[in-house]
Amino acid sequence: MSITRRAIPDASSLDEAIDIVRGNWLHEIEQHHQQYSGNSTVEDILDIGCSVGWSTRFLAQKFPSANVTGLDLSPYFLAVAQFKENNRPLNGKRINWVHANGEDTGLPAKSFDLVSIAYVLHECPAKATLNLVKEAFRLLRPGGTIAITDNSPKSKILQLLFLLYSAQNGTHVGQELSPVLFTLMKSTEPFLDEYYLLDLEAALREAGFDHVETVLTDPRHRTVTATVPY
Ligand SMILES: C[S@@+](CC[C@H](N)C(=O)[O-])C[C@H]1O[C@@H](n2cnc3c(N)ncnc32)[C@H](O)[C@@H]1O
Image 1 (cartoon, protein in one colour):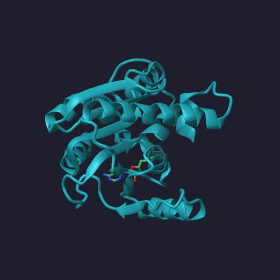
Image 2 (image 1 turned 90 degrees about the horizontal axis):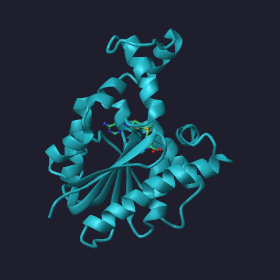
Image 3 (image 1 turned 135 degrees about the vertical axis):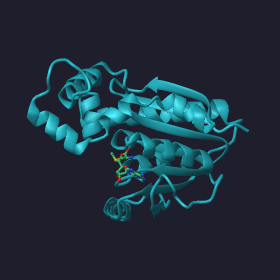
């Protein structure tokens, strides 16, 4: 909720902010898949880093005929996801919740048409991101789509925050972030610098993906989509 509220501060309600941020992201995924998948339908979806299941639920609603799996490192978040699903089931559909590391899921190769990684990579060291991208490539069928959404390095507001952050971190010279805010950011987001410095599009191409595309889906976030070649 806070992700969407901060991205669209002028929205008249939280629901409107959620509709814009999640709606644009889902639209981008659908467009990319329709354009490059050779008309294959989305039958199996994996949501890596599903947390308490928000992104998973949006994906399940967008692709109602698909089998949906939410995967996370945290058994606690998964327990909440399961609890929320039990309290508010999606029209008869059950989501498969998996506790695993997205870098090495143990799931069968070529078993998904869509792998989503939403708001996960800014929390990861670059090495983990590269492993997540490689694992997604292994898990997708030919024509399958990877969709990554997260902070955009091109967002003006995030550029300013990062400049202040990296000045304090010793990476750049410039104006300094207040020590309190810096400590808060560093302790909750320790890998932000690695996230911003990694060329994600190049990493996707390196892993074997085609049709790598990046769209600023709201003022703060980009959605990067790519396809596993046939
Ligand atoms: C900000 S939350 C994701 C939110 C969710 N995808 C959404 O869009 O609402 C980030 C999640 O990524 C998970 N995560 C981080 N690294 C992971 C990994 N290597 N494998 C699986 N999950 C991971 C964390 O446990 C956390 O639940």
